[in-house]
Image (cartoon, rainbow over all chains, first blue to last red):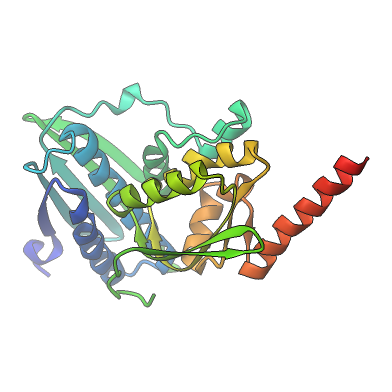
Length: 147
Length: 132
């Protein structure tokens, strides 16, 4: 298989209604790679959360931004590279806590930063980069041999 | 939903059973569709509906924005002796609930009748407490 066949890419405009296009694309690629239904769901959710964050925070809900979503497959490694312009994303400033821990600690149910928790809970590796004024988020999941 | 099958959009039907509002969700609940759903939930809670069951039988997908809608209102309804309870989760969504720890924050039931009964039993307990 050539490198071109291994990598697939789509681009969407920064509108929330386009999230479904990304999910459909990721679902197709993750199933083709051999993930089970639950892992497919975890990957879809994580990519959805990154795209949602980029639309809401980096593009501040302005619809004229562009988001690229690329799938890279190598061996048992399935990576999704999400890149977008807009305001820089600074993950180190965020404290990621599970909703249950937050609930136990405060006695209150709070929804903030749930997307970030999902991304880190469901992917094997999460990498953030800032490249030439672009935000690049790389989400990786490994296909286990028993799948 | 079968593997690879495309998702349909989102819709909610509201029914009332024994003074409990049952919301039947259909389609997907993401950052886009949850905007409208949050308004609906706000109206429901602000007009005094505190006992809510969310039937997820026909829900194909839920993201943090969807969960966020329930998280935004659950403390309010609990303060008013109500709750938001869930039933009929697909295997996939059930697993997500489990992995995110939501089964320790929300009550989840296999079917709608059990969810309705749980509110009835809670009401009976409250009446007994008040008598004491």
